Image (tube, rainbow, N blue to C red; front, top):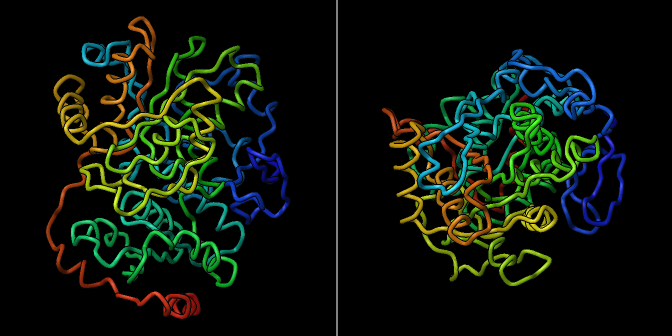
Amino acid sequence: MDRTLVCYRCESEYRDDRRVRCDCGEPLWFDVDSSALEDLAGRGERPTGRDGRGPWRYADALPAADPGGIAAAAGNTPLIRSPRLDRVAGCRVYVADEGENPTGSYKDRGSAVAVALALERGADVVGTVSYGNMAMSTAAHAASLDLECVVLVPETVSPGRLELIAQYDPTILRVEGDYGGLYREALELTRSLPISFLLSDDPARVAGYETALFEIHEALAPETPDAIVVPASSGGLASGIWRGLRDLERAGAFAEPPRLYVVQTAASDPITRAFAAGRDDVSPLPADEVGETIARSIGNPNPPSGTRALTAVRRTGGAAISVTDEEIERAQRRFAELGGFCVEPASATTLAGVERLTERGEIDEDETAVLVPTGTGFKELGTGAETEADRAETVARPDLSSRLESLASRR
């Protein structure tokens, strides 16, 4: 595909495929030729079944070729009709179970494509800023392709989380100070160091997330769901789903696309607040307005793609809503007891959210909603956590650039 990058807001185009953000400040995504999606739109011979190519089932819509490794194992997740969940959801429910990915979350879709593109660009070292699913996923895909990986985590990260990340043998740096500011700093470091930081809204990641929508469409066509419900942290997944809806609509897949709904934890919900206030932009939450939550992986007070996710729900006729920890815990139990799904708390927000939406009349009982639980609940603390935690090196914020430079020079 053409690697032209486009801004969804001001429509500026860039030929530099290493950019992440537009001059207007908003995140970029890759332009997709809608003719490449005509088969999916139903105007050609639509492929059926699983063929083992992962995201590269939709190769014409991706900015990189299949690199090998575990990349082709990403995606191809099941879409499951779950009538028993209808009882609590208040509508017809399908579950797109992203916990079936190689490292147990949807992040593998993005990592597969982003690491593949970094490899094509000649990268020897990739990195990310995460202490959860994205860190695990990036490290795993890098390991499978013999790339070094650097993961920046906060100084206060728990030993259990470090153990999950460390099993893929990346270099883990505990960074002192303001962890939230590392997103912007990592973008700058990518320009000055031989390390490709693959962050939450990297355009190649978003291209990978878009394939989740393609699979949902392919599984249900010629029917179209009325609603798609996803958790929201950085806004990257919502961006990918919206991008897919736009591309398939241009290709003639449906006259009216599904409505997109994003769900946040009430402890940290900047997108929901902006939606409720009628604002066009998402603002960071002040520190004193951010609470603790069991859905830690989506407790993001300053989402890099927050405004794009906000625009997505508005343009599709959806909404952004928040749910409490009590609702999340109840939904997590119901996912298991009624559907047989073991999901992490962040994923349970989708069921809690759809309950809210049907109660408010935004989704009718005769409508169909696709819930996208983004990660498995099986990531339990194992043995050896203290040993793995000891492997992480603590780095003072002013020393980060020089430490990364020394790591990159080892290749």
